[in-house]
Structures are given as structure tokens and as C-alpha cells.
Image (cartoon, rainbow, N blue to C red; front, side, top):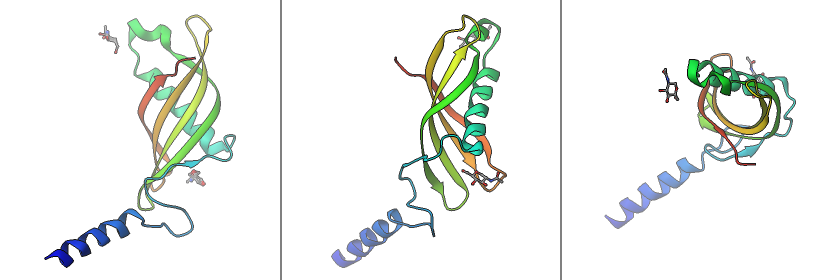
Amino acid sequence: MASKSCLVLLALLALSLLVLPGQGYLNQWYPVKNLNDPHVQSFAKSAVEEYNAGLNKTTQYNSLDYLKTVKGKYKYVELDAGKDFLLNIVAKKRGDGSMGNYQALIYVDTFFANSTTLIRFKRLDN
Ligand SMILES: *[C@@H]1O[C@H](CO)[C@@H](O)[C@H](O)[C@H]1NC(C)=O
Ligand SMILES: *[C@@H]1O[C@H](CO)[C@@H](O)[C@H](O)[C@H]1NC(C)=O
């Protein structure tokens, strides 16, 4: 009995340490080394577009123009199919032209031509 639960624990441990060939561990954050990578830039831009698209008439003044990405990390969330990107973005509010720091959590489906889904978008305190 004891050795059985021990085996289960070992199996769970092995799963949690699952290594993707030539990539990295599942669910562990890695820094995005090249923030200017065109793919990373397009993920950040699509996050801002999706955020803008979710605004309605009364919140339209909050819509943003993407300026740049200043920090980023990613993790593998599914075997070979998906990555989460957490990107710190600088954007300008169209309403009053003010610049601000924002953070976007984006799911990128690497299997489906890097299609992106915005999971969370928030303003960071300055
Ligand atoms: C617009 O969006 C805001 C924030 O999500 C919400 O509180 C508000 O009720 C919405 N207004 C309309 C007219 O849909
Ligand atoms: C998806 O994005 C990655 C960077 O995260 C890139 O290496 C890869 O070439 C891209 N694939 C497609 C189909 O654009």
C-alpha cells in the first residue's frame, strides 16, 4: 500500500518534470530574449487590438495604440501546442494621449499558425 502511493507520487513528480525535447519544462516561465522578434511583436499588437475590440461606446476613450514591449516571459502550457506569453507593454491612450504600462497574458496556439487569445489585460501601476 505504502509503496503503491509512493509510486503514484513518483509518477506525478516525473510528469511535473516533463521535458519537451529541445525546449523546456511545462509550466515554467522563461524570459523572452528577443522582444523585437516579429512574432513577439505581433502577439503584443494583437493583445492590444483584442483589448480595444472589447471596449464599448462608453469605454472607447480607453482604447490604446501599441508602442512597445519592454519585458516578456513565456511558458509551455501544452505539449507542443501552446504557449502563454506574459508581456509588459507600453501603450498610448487615444482619448488623452497618455502613455501607460500594461500587462497582457496571451495564449498562443503554436499548432494553429500562432493564433492568439487574450486571457488578461491590465494596467500596471506606475
Ligand atoms: C461598457 O463596458 C463597461 C466595462 O466593461 C461596463 O461597465 C458598461 O456597463 C458597458 N456599457 C454599455 C453601454 O454596454
Ligand atoms: C510562431 O511563433 C514562434 C515564436 O514564438 C516562431 O518561432 C514560429 O516560427 C511561429 N510560427 C508561425 C507559423 O508563424
